[in-house]
Image 1 (cartoon, rainbow, N blue to C red):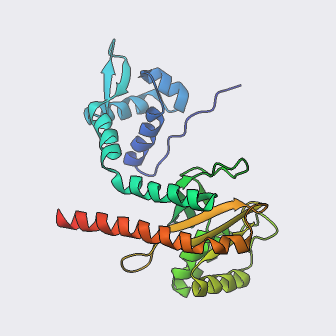
Image 2: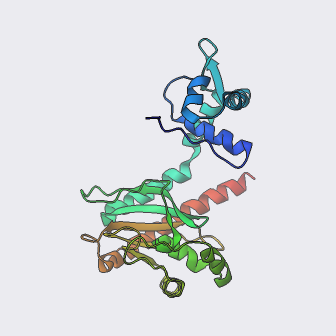
Image 3: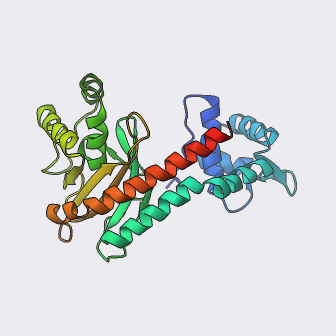
Amino acid sequence: MQPETAKIDGDTPALRLLSLLEVIAEKDQFFTLQGLVEETGLPKPTLHRMLQQLETAGMLQRDGDNRQYGTGIRLRRLAENLLLNNTVQGARHAVLSQLVKEVGESCNITALSGNEVLYLDRVETQAPLRFYLHPGSQVPVHCSASGKLFLAQMKPAQRKRLLAHVPLERFTHNTLTDLTSLEGEIERVGNDGYAFDDEEFLPGLLCIAVLVPAAKGRSNLGLAIQGPTMRLSREKALSFLPALHKAAQSIAAIDAEATADNSAFA
């Protein structure tokens, strides 16, 4: 049985180099050109050229007998700077952790990415029964509580254009797959200021979400609480709205402060 090859893709050479860096970043030891050829399935001359480009840029460096590669100083500095300076992410995560302590259920921060909802951050409950969805997970916009909020912000023509090219796939008996029904739900969400995913993506999972207020214009951050239906009913979820709104305001304040700091140094 052939081992699964690592996927190197992208529409441009730069994106393919980034994809190769993602494969390299998972390694905990030095690697060789031949090893990458076997791992990725790419032609040896192609990989050799890509490695040369990354080495020239300081992202990789050769070691030992000059045939092995490791991460370069520039790549390590990039990783270190991200960890040292990403205070916004750390502050948001602290708010998310506090919300989980208050409500006792898993919570996440989301954003709209194309026609899907992307999990930017997530903190899991300590309760023994939970649904694990890690940061980086993506869910369809039409059956996500946050997704409905993002859709409700759009102008009707923009929303129609997006949904016209998105298959409204059915995941459970509760998934809204009819445009008329979905539009009715989106109108209610716009009026209420919060949204439910009532077992629409995963059976047994209920979610309530609100938007993180934006300084101006539309928001592209959602904040949500998720829990199994045996523990989290719609009524109980609604009782969490004050805590959810408070956390959303805290995240908005963090983002506003970071924006102001950036403007001061512009």
